[in-house]
Each structure stands twice: as structure tokens, then as C-alpha cells.
Amino acid sequence: MDSKAGVNDEWLDIESLDIEAQGVAHRAPAPGQEGPGKVVFVEGALPGERVQVQVTRRKNNWEQGSVTAVARESAQRVRPLCPHFGLHAGACGGCKMQHLHAAAQVAVKQRALEDNLWHLAKVRAALVLPPIHGPAWGYRHRARLSVRHVAKKGVVLVGFHERKSRYVADMTVCPVLHPLAGALLPALRELIAAMRARDRLPQIELAAGDDVLALVLRHLEPLDAHDRQRLREFGQRHGVQWWLQPGGPDSAALLEEGTGPAQARALAYRLPEFGVTIPFKPTDFTQVNPHINRVLVERALRLLDPQPHERVIDWFCGLGNFSLPLATRARSVLGLEGSQALVRRAEENARANGLAERTRFEACNLFEIGPAQLRAWPAAERWLVDPPREGAFALAQALVQLHEAGDWPLPRRIVYVSCNPATLARDAGLLVHRAGYRCSAAGVVNMFPHTAHVESIAVFERDACAKPPIAAATGV
Image (tube, rainbow, N blue to C red; front, top):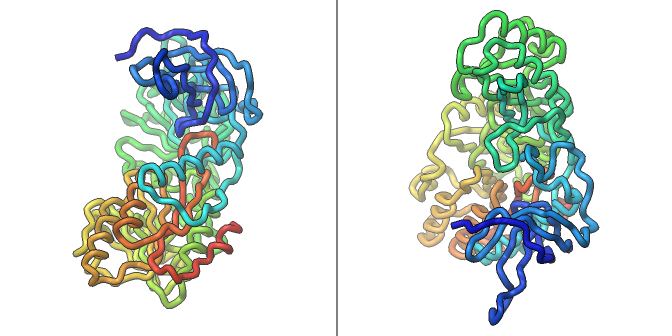
């Protein structure tokens, strides 16, 4: 149980930063104690700093708190750009690292990737890839903003939640959002305040394509003519699309015509190196950061290095973010996804890009895949694996079983794109220690600057004589 929290006068030296962007320190050891004292996790502190701490949680083996004073400041500390970032009451919880220099953030994430691979799986990559990073501001082209009408104060709040709170932060700007969306926050607050259904509008989801910004309004009751007209006028004035979502994500539909030129434009993003355009709906899963996604796709394909005569399987293929570029390089691509609806969308996108003859998409339960199902598909020389946070445990286990059976040709090279270093490490342990692979390269992808989210990419190979295009890929 937590014991009484409070301010401790002891000065602590911050040794490192954990994956939640908390400084890590140790108290002085107790009399007679060997080794370091109790570990303390300190919000707002950076490595190399000497700080005092307001303790908010105290357990037998650790404490947690926030900085109250800094006697020695890190050279990597910077002034946060956003006025809503910080440790103060009501601070926005969307970012955790704005006080740390952007280059240092990337180094922290690289260390997190390497630590997870080694401590959880005893795997070290033969080559550490240069990190993929890009714009630190205005990068977020997808976001879900909470909406709350505070009747007692007569205001509407639109934004992310406060730090460690269910309350919506009182935000007027957001420099990480798509620039148009970030600038619209005050106007959105005024819009919702003027709508009759303002107490029944819990969220606005934004999605930006290359040419248009879409806003999806979740509403818990049908909107009347007055509120619909307000949305139309807002769309015309600010050049955005409105979608209405009365139920789950699949219920989202474009507001009827009459909201201006933006309404006629389809949401899509381009991967110009491959001549591919991928249409999507605002509630579809697409990468939050399109600048990084373009570079990620290019690097993944260079690392995978598909040849014109080879087959490739794209696991967790989604709308075809990797499948369609792969189809411009390989003989054929099999894209696998858990939803039949997504499969149909991927097929539509393949046809729209003239790649239907070189692609095939199928739906299956990717979290219960086994050796028998793998044997049912044509063997492929190369795999692209891009799972959700849960990872690809069943797939890695199936490869272990097929390796032990020795009667099926395993892929020679796997490129694994991960959004969770812990599940990547778990799956890497199976591939390396039990399925005959080696980890030839790994590196981080800074998809979410200023947050603790770690995206990464890793390469696994079976043929020790293979000559992966690592040198070319590291130049991306």
C-alpha cells in the first residue's frame, strides 16, 4: 500500500530515463544495506540532474514523484514549445518529453529498444540502424480529441486528457497536431458550445490526408437541422470535411453535401517513390505520422530487398501500406489481415493502383495462426510483419514448430515493424533462439516525437551467407 507522500529534502542524482520519460534515481542506502538504496521515479527530471522530489507514491521497493527543485540542470533540457505541457495541475497528458531535446528523445528510445531485446530475449542486433526521425512539430495527422461541456463554468473543452486524469485539458493550441487542426481548437470549442447537442458529443476524431482534413464527430443522439447547419458552415469557413459517427467506427459517414469544396475531396496519402496512392476513411487505422511513414516504407523495402522473381507475405497488411509498394518490386504479394472488411478495402486499393494481378489478400485469425495454416499457403522467400502492440507471438511459435519439423521452407528474411519493444523482444527471442534466425539489424522509428511511444524495425535472417542491403538502407 502507499504510505504517506510528501516532500523529501534529500537531493537525488538522476541516473537515467525510463520508457515513461521518468528520471530514475536511488536514495542513499539504509544503514547496513548493501548496494544502492530505494529506486525513485521522478517525473520532469532528466539524466545528469540533481533534484528534490515531491513524493506522490511510496512502496516498499520504490517511490514515485515529481521535481520540486533542480540544483544541477541537464544540458539536454529545453523549453517546452506548448504552454499546456508540464507537471502543473491541468497540464495536458498528450506529450511526456517536450522538456528533453528532440535528438536526446530518440537516443532514449534507441536505448529502450536495445534494453528490451537484451534483457527480455538475450538478443543483440548485429547492426544498429540509424534512427528514422523527422519533423518534431505538426506531425500528428491522426488524433482522438475528447469533448466536454462544463456547464458550471459555461465552457466547452476540446483536447487530450490531463496528465493522469480523466478530465479534459483546457487547451487552446496543440503544436504536435496537423497545423490546421491545432489552430482550430478555439473555433471547435465555440462550435460545440453553440450546438444544441453539446452535452451528447463525447469526441472528435481528426484524420488528415495529403489534401484534406476530416473531422469525425461522435454523437450519442441524432443531430437536428440546427446542429447540422452549424457543422456545414464551419466546414465551409475552415475548409474541412465533417463526418458523423452515431455508433462504432464503421458507422461514420460523410455529412451530406453542402459543406464546401473540401467535402468533394477523398482522403488519401501518397507513397511517391512507389507510385502508390492509398485512399482511407477517417476512422481507418493509418500511421499517425505520414512523414515518417514514407521513410519507414522505403527502409522496410530496402531491408527486405524483394527480388522480381520472389513471393512476399505481408502479415497484418491493413489497407496495403506495405503490400502495395511491395507489389511494385516482387513477383507477388500475399497480404493477410484479421478482418474481411479490411481485406476488401486492400483489394480495392490494389485495383485502384493497378496492382490487383500481383496481389492477393485473405482474412484469417493472425493471433491463432499455426503450422498447418502456413503449409496451406505457398511458401514465400520474404516476410513483412507489422503487428499491433500484442505482437506476432502465434506466428513466431508456428515458425519454431516448422523449423523443428524441418519439412517446410521458412522465409529467409523477415522485416518486423513493431510498435511495442517488449513484444518485439519476446518474438525475437523465439525467432533467434528456437527458429534458426539471427537478428542482423534493428533500429528505432520516432513516429511519435515528445511521447514515450517506441516504434522500431528489426531484420531477421536464416542464411548466414545472405548479403542484405544494409548499407543502402541505412542511408534513408
